[in-house]
Image (cartoon, rainbow, N blue to C red):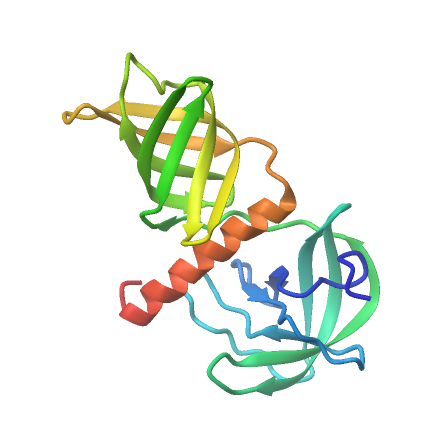
Length: 214
């Protein structure tokens, strides 16, 4: 099954826990999956975008989002397939259990980021982003936005993907050009939306790694 409960569904974002490593590793489930119960995912990468080496036969833990919250399952690495996007073939092991996602990764990225609060709106750009919040710059009008304001934030994650959700302003600093630099915390965003942000964060990390900027 790939309904999100027993196994992660196609295109899911995975936290990958590798023995003897405490850092955050992320992989993505491919859209097409074989019918033999094997799970095919991209080779796990660290926060710098570097692919990790795991010996064939070793066991890793996979954590993903489902309707019931984070789920976890062990899997054995059967094969590493090279290519433009190297993949792992994994054999799921044991039973599914409740999981725990690892800490959020933050990356510098400039995305169209708009705020709204009833009749008030502000068009801005992000400075950095994680699945738990965003820091950016917006026009400052009559002291808004300010610390503890609750606003709707809309992120343009890609050319055709907009994501909107509630947030709270945690820090705000007026700048000399009449704008405000503020940090916002996302409030109770669904796991699916958090995964979309997480995917965008790691896409940006891979881009920076390819350019040698990490």
